[in-house]
Length: 448
Image (cartoon, rainbow, N blue to C red; front, side):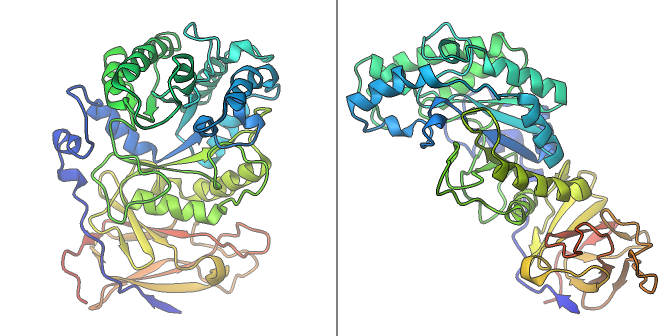
């Protein structure tokens, strides 16, 4: 079957032309201290991160922290005084988290050291509302950071400038908007003491994700404490639960839940499929961003099996196709119809994501597809391959020649490839096949 992708081409990506100062204009409130440009370039190489939302109210299966807003005094009293007494994650083993993350191709992780509730998952001297005053009684953040370093995963922390426990202690109504200026000043002073602990007692932290009012001021404070620490939210664009319709000047990061809730939800949860996750990652990277996808551990500390298997489906795809994701950069044209593109940093290789042959339109093993590309043209040095394949054999089918081919025509660059690799036992691989084109040239004004 021959497929022609003739949809209107996406807008050209301007990231490479933007200077750091121009990028700074994209995020309101950025101060004079900015992320280190070399670290931002490294961040764009990572491509894929794992978010971890976990706190003491995972015992209830509720939304993390937000149930405290508008809650009765009885609810707040039980939340603050009873939940710590029963939080005992005996099965918490961050090495298991890292094992799942590594197989999925994750390069960095961001863990909720403190969410809006104010409960601290580390050994802090600022409040008794912390993990040390639970039956577990051990520093979860320290174990997490040390595990990241053992496994070569960049260690990131989520930190909420807002603190519901402190507002309640101050006699203020718990809320996310309209906190009096004087009260907010006290909260931010308190936050800085906590950041002193996190950024002085645990060694270098790679990423800080600041979520809430006051994040711009705290971003400046973080840069003073650790100039090499990257601030994502508070310092760059971080769209939540959505992807931008067009490329954004980099670096940027999109964060998503796996289901409908950030924290563990024991019932009525609706998870994304592995295929959906793969497509989100492809689109994010084509648009120049990183994808930060969330896991919500159970109260015991274990990542639920339903979540783990989604990450493992992503892991199989990444095992084959990671070079098109890690270290990749956006092309001048990000897509043709449902075919997406990224390129290597040196611009010598273009990765073609054939996303139209997925799900119900699955590409059968041994079947050849011909695809016409308008945005690229061949050169004398052009080479073609399918990631993961040697183009020499289709199992049990010696009659099939799986060699990848290309042909330059007046209409465009025609590529012809076979899905030869047997990935699933039933040979019904539902996810995107990636073609690598080396030494091709971009066509600035393709024929309609």
